[in-house]
Structures are given as structure tokens and as C-alpha cells.
Image 1 (cartoon, one colour):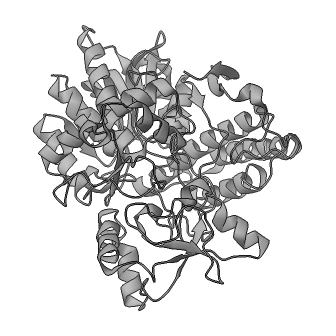
Image 2: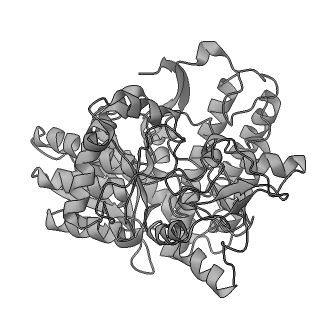
Length: 558
């Protein structure tokens, strides 16, 4: 049997960070700044990776000189926002109290947080209520954070896909990764005192706006739920996995940034579809897309659609502000396409749609220090399940997790021999079998099959015990088939194969949690339980593994 090459010399580091997005880089900057040895392992390249790869233009934060000394109204505004519905209050409050410090850090390091010379809050806003989204120039953010991490002494290893953590006695001692720089993949073993999961969101679990075109997704297509899957396999608690999350934007052209657009959502007759604004205004935007996130789908299915973004009444000044913001948000590919095709939003309404479900703010449960229920295992950013604030949340909890991990690592005297555990042998054997197969289904076939099952049996239109149970059975069959027949012939296809295995783990937890939650809430719609159960208003549902046994447990929100 062909064996995967293995680097026999383990890499030792106090803090190993899986993922070099916003959360991972911020964790590395903080941990290295506190004197810990740090490795940031990134599947792609930290200069252009993750959902913040090409920029962002909104950073949620509390700035006392703008908002006043009372944080209460800002906290309430956060909870009403599109990101605040599934968070523990204690985590959200810690984030808000530290958010301005991270804003000041970014500005000092070279990210323009007040490009107009003042703190500019706009978009995602209700009339007459506090604005909590800071407008900033984030097009260069990944390059700046990469440079800062290196300055602080963090070691960045690009083209390294992390696959599992290694535990001994319920504590982290190391991890397994796959180096993909060369044609043939190489297995690498880490000895680590702490690990931070910062692997990004979970894309490619459901069919994208153009089915079959797997990478036409509004989120980073190589963020495939690895943090959630790695944590799940290790025994960490996952939370809120049953709730789909969907973004929206231009139809068929998967791009986030709907709040960057300055206009009004209108139907084909030119009627405004939401009640919040009657005039295009850069300060507010049109928050209808946040509050009534399914408006694009609802109007389409009822025959009253499509729903368009109409910028025809947007002032010239606001329009230029919008176009600048779309660049900072990283939507340059869309802008280039529109210019090439002669599409002018001042003259042409742009149809919007609701995109496919994905995993963001659904996943690993952490405490206020960023730590999971496994000692030495931390998480930050999009893979966290009980807190979400997108880019700002990743920056702030990345910093918190880095600080916590560095503190814990400093109290541990020596590294453990992580390479001696059975997981290393089992992984080497399994990986070798995938690589030795000359023929068989590839990762694309497996990904498409997974998306079909998730869409048809755990989708957003209807769920029930019978439908979910059937889907869980089919997913189990697919998982067995993939593990026994999946073939890869080089580092790239092997990397993609491992992504699919992680996505299937995530899919399993979605089915299990959806079966357990016997009510309808948000986008979790049960036809056999069509009501929202008020007894569950203050409850979260955990999914975790004990060996091969899956545990589902309810707990109070914190």
C-alpha cells in the first residue's frame, strides 16, 4: 500500500493556530507579543485568505466618544443586528468592551479605520437608533496583519492544511497537518501546548447560487468547516448547528456586502418593499435585507418579485461613497464585470437574491477566554457557535484567544510526544489509502452529492423527523462510500478530499441538532413542529462526541 510521506521531526510550538484569517492572525500577533512561540498554519496564503481576503468595509464596535459612556444601548443594538441572535450575552459584552482597542490597533498598524478623518458609522442601521458599524478601508487588511504577525515573531507556514488535534488525558498535546507545497503531500506532526481553531466559516455544504459551480459562493470557498469538524472529532461542544445562516447580494454573482449598497429595495413596479427608509441615504442604507433576510426569496416564490436594489435616486456623493466601499469590501471582480458589461447601478436596477446556507456563528462553543471544553483548545472567528460579529468579532476574539493560549502555554513546562499516539498511525494509513487508489470518485463528485443531500433533506424550506432521518441515513451511506472509494492523485486533490470529509462531519451535526430541536425557530422550519416553543427561548443545544457516541445536551444561554 502507498504510504503518505511523513516528516519525522515534530514541529514544537507553544501556540499552534489553525487558520491565517483575521482571527488567526490577531491571535498570532497577541500570543507572540506575550512571548509565546507561535506557528500560524494556513491552508492558502495569509496575505489573501479567508472571508476577509480581499477586504471589508464594516467593523462593528463601541466607541465611547461617539456612542457615549453607556454601553447598554449599543449592546441592545448588537442583539437586534443580523449577527446578534445566537450569541451568549457574556461573550458579546466582552467583545464590545474590547472592540475599540482593536480599532485603534488596526489604525496604528496601517489599516485606515477613519479614511474620512473621523469615525464614520453607516449602514446596517435603523432610523433613529445608534449606528454600530464603523465604515473603514479594509482592502489591505490581510497584508497588514500578515506583516504585523511576522514583526511580532509569529512563524507563518502557508500551504499547510491542518486535519486534527491530538489529545492526551483530555488535554491538547499536538496536531496533524498536511503540507501541500509540492506535488506529493507531506504529513506533519506538531507538538503544541495550545491550539487555536481559527479556520473560518463553512462554505460548500449547500448548493451555491449556480449549482455545479462550487466556488461561486459569497464566502471563502476554501473555508469548509474544518474547525468545527476538528473540534467535533476531538470532543469539543458544537452549538447552534441546526440554524441555517444565509447572506444576500446580486443574483447569481455570489458577493457579500449588501449593506455597502446605498439605495432602496424595490419590486418590479418600483414600490419600496421595506418600511424602514423612503429615501436612499448612506447613513442608513436599507436594513430591510437584514431584518427580512428572506424578502428576496419570499417575493420570488409569491410571484411578486424579483426584488431589486435601486440606486437611481442615490445622490452623486453617496454613489461615489458606495463605489469606494465596494472596493474596500473586496468586490472588485463584480465591479470589473459590471463596467465591462455596461451595467450602471444609477441607470439599471440590480436584482438581489438570498444565497445558500453556510456555517458562520454556528460551531464551536467557547467561554469568555476563547477556550473550549477541552483544555488547551481555543477557537475564534467564524467557526465559533455561541458568538458572532464577523470581521470585528474575529479580530477581537482572535486577540482574546491568543492572550489566553499564551498564558496557559507559559504554565506548561514541557512538550508531550504527540507523535506517539494512535491517531497519527490511523491518519497515515487512511491518507495512504486515498492516495494509492488509481481510480475512483473524486472530491467534486463527493461535494456535489453532499450538497444534494443537505439541500433536499436539511434545507431551509421544510424539515421534519421523517425527512431529516432519511437524510441522515443517506449522509451516513455517502460518508462510508466516500471513505472507502475516494481517490486523490496529488496534493491539490488530496486537500480538496480532506475538505469534503470535514464538510460531511459538519453535515452530520446539522442533521442531529435539527432532529433534536422540535420546534420552528428562525430558518429552522419543522413542518411537524410549526410553532416556536417559548420554553426554549433561553436555551442552546450542544452536540458533542464521546468516543463514537454522540451526545445532545440543552443548556441555558449565558
